[in-house]
Image (cartoon, rainbow, N blue to C red):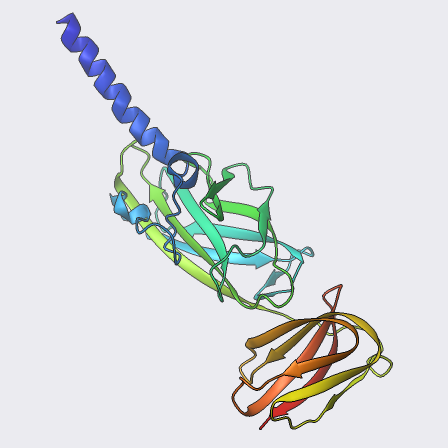
Length: 273
């Protein structure tokens, strides 16, 4: 009888250890991203958690340093990202995992720092995740986010979470996923544009053109199409730059230059024939 009782204790302890390992975050415990993002593991919270009906959904918001909610970010600036699990019926607790990726190549979008007290930052593979530090009584998970450098383009935050009934099992919980995209906002510089002007010659251009600056410039050149998508980026260091557009389809493009402080100081139209 004593042996049987001991076996039951060990079996119970094993089950509890398994359940607790999930509560600490999948990236921290299993080196897995389960947000539903491209390149993540195919599992999400819904793989294990089910059966609950709390009317749950996830909303991801971006807040600037003045406390204003924004819909676009500026390169290199710091924001607060809030992932909120809303419910119509109060659960026993909440869990979440979130990652931010650059749309063009699915790389880490900037950097997370200083997570809220109910969250932690965990690395799985080459990605950094914000995730629960345990079953959370709060439905909001937050982190500081330093946006990627100018020119990264649109980024998307992917999140998977669940509203748990708190019974220590995966039954009776509701799992949800969400993704929110934020465009890059380019702010015009207050630098004297006339003093820092440039010319493009020839323009229209067939293959190669020369960009001549009035003064020395160190920064990055961006060529974007009518939809605002960057199709070419090049470093600039000097008063003259040669641009090869032979591989670009004919059309009208916007040529902009960012200085080394990521401020847009030049912008002109370029016509490819």
